[in-house]
Amino acid sequence: MLFDTHVHLNADQFMEDRDEVIQRALDTGVEHMVVVGFDRKTIPLAIEIAEQYDFIYAAVGWHPVDAIDMTDEDLKWIEELCRHPKVVAIGEMGLDYHWDKSPHDVQKEVFRKQIQLAKKVNMPIIIHNREATEDIVHILKEENAQECGGIMHCYNDVVDHAKECLDLGFYISLGGPVTFKNATDPKIVAEEVPLDRLLIETDCPFLAPHPNRGKRNEPAYVKLVAEKIAELKGISLDEVARYTTENAKKVFSIK
Image (tube, one colour):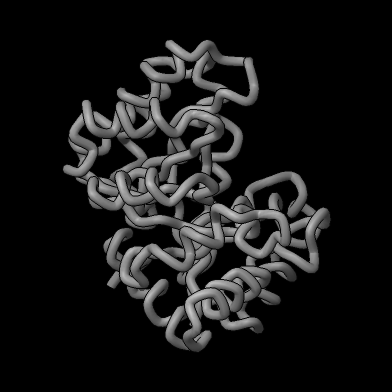
């Protein structure tokens, strides 16, 4: 059974056929999913979906691209939602230097506040990183983020930085890019990161794995990610599925 640790079933792309998408995931062997909410629109819907399905959970946080929009009231709201029985993580949070909506200093402040909140409520965090790895690792170390732990979501950087994150107790989650023919770094990470520290995800509707690249991604495609990791490691799909599911249940405290 497979565990897709990062889905956006709360995205507009799934408004017309969400139930069918979820059924296809179940038919493919996806046992659990975590729907990630990251702003005022997507957070309530993430929780609503999690409440509808026993096997779906929610994460709540504030995306770095929209950091400039986050208020103290939003942070208090996220803290309150952490008491919900289906909320298993805070995120996605982090830094995104690709888009320029939120200044870097604002992103860093919002990132730090969410790490501090996660330590306060004893929740793991889900890290969004785009072109900001060194600053993210620096902040994780300064804020003692190993106290809460969490996930490097859709990791797409060099293995040396992955090892720094492993040293902080974080899990490395791989998505569609590990299947892309021109993506070298995720393949090296898949080969070198120990099985007991790997997770799998789709980040759907984004980053569909080969051979569906460019199309709408969905949780059923997480099997393609697992198959590629199995190929790279020279092990069975069952072994990848077993380890990554156990890892996900451990980091999210799902029994």
